[in-house]
Every structure is written in C-alpha cells, then in structure tokens.
Image (tube, rainbow, N blue to C red; front, side, top):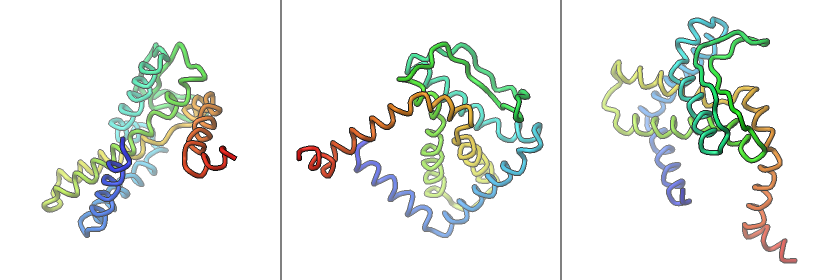
Length: 184
C-alpha cells in the first residue's frame, strides 16, 4: 500500500472520529468491547457474543497458513477447555517454520485495520443512530477484540522473531538515516 494511500486513510479516520457523531460511534464501539471483556468469564455467553470475531480470527490464521505454505490441517470454532481457561477456536498446521510462523501467528492483527476501515465507512455514511448501527458497532467491537493475538499465537510468531529483527534492520538501512550511516 503506497504511503499516500495510508496517509489518506489515516486522515479519513481522524476526520471521521473528530465529528460529534464519530466520537459517539467510537464510544459505543468501545463500550461493546468492554462488554465483551467483562463477558469473558462467562464462557457460554462470551463464546456466543464473540463468535463473529472468533470466526474471522481463525480464518485469518487459516489463510495465512495457506499463503505461507503452513499447510493447515484442522479448523475449529467450537470452544474447548484448555489448561489455562478456554480456547474459542483453533487452526492446526503441518508446517509452521521459521519463514511463516510470524505471518501465521500474527495474522489476526489484520482485523484491526479492517475494523477501522469499517468504522470510517459507518461514520461517514451515518444519518442518525438507529438500531442497525448498534449491530454494526457490536460487529466492529468483535473485530477489534478478535484482532488481539492470543498467547499461543504469540508463541507461534516468536518462531520467526529473528525474521522481524532482520526486516527492521533492512528497513532502517534503506531509510535515509540508516543508509547514510551504512555508507560510512
């Protein structure tokens, strides 16, 4: 994505959230996120309330596994008891390696820009807060909540930590300051 498109997107987000209706909408979305947070101790209610986000969270792991040759072997969005609580869903892979672990583990982070895009879209087209907007706010909240990687996701991504360090180093060298120092 070119820098001008990112700048345009961020300006649209800032201007949408600067309006009174944008502030109210963002507040309603954050209230929904808090409701999800407080429901997490009631697994039946939480798993039902968080289902749309859980489905997309696991789907992004699955897609990242396909694209990076992780060979997904299983997909589930049925909550199950694990040692430290509950897992709302899971995707199993046959080939998580150094080159794909970071992408597979952190794939759900892509839900955050999607949620922000939908927030801007809903606020810009807002003609009064009606009941359907509450449903949109709830769906946005599930996307935001599901964008957070779980501890198992972070453990998987840690398998590619050195790849991230390498990418940051290359970026730093390619930028003007890093390139100038590298030329010395």
